[in-house]
Amino acid sequence: MDINHILNELFVKLFRNINAIEETAIRTDEYIDVTTNDMHVMEAIGPKDCKNMTTVAKMLAVTTGTLTISMNSLVKKGYVNRIRSEEDRRVVLVSLTEKGQKAYFHHQKFHQEMINSIVAELDDAEKQVLAKALGNLYEFFITKQKG
Image (cartoon, rainbow, N blue to C red):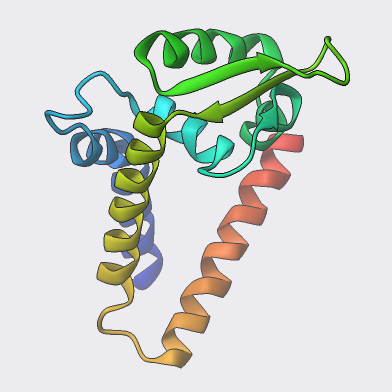
């Protein structure tokens, strides 16, 4: 089998299964109420300072309306705090609660384990080639997304 066919099969399988695999890995008894989408929203918020909703929405490439739906759920579940800015009452700021920070680091651990698994048997040159290839793949998707 030629390498293009092998790569195509691997990418198709990965893309088909990646969300399910990630959700299975992050959904422990402690985080049974968290979806992969929830985790990605918490990842965009980050464990430190407050961010405004517009910034988080841009990071996730969604509208603020779409993000509001996710935020409502995350606030209700106790993972996110939402407050109005004192300087500009139109601005909504979000931050992770202690529970949200704990979930954030749980998700980061999964990502670190994934990266460690990928690069475990690669030398530095191979890691650079992998990074370039994945960067090329990312650019392909961005170009397709923009039309």
